[in-house]
Image (cartoon, rainbow, N blue to C red; front, side, top):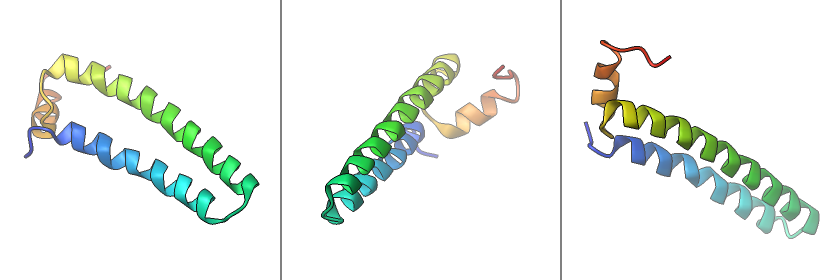
Length: 79
């Protein structure tokens, strides 16, 4: 029941990009690193679109608390 629960989910989901970049760099191959950069770019573009979707939900609810977002869905559907 943290007030910044949605921001915590953003932060945890963004950590995957670092793992991909570091694995490509640690392989000590130019082509593996280019592939890792490409994969990281795809993940970042996915996170941007997901973030915009969650901003709309945030504007409808008016809170970053995950409990209040779920309780808001009892009265209103996010269609």
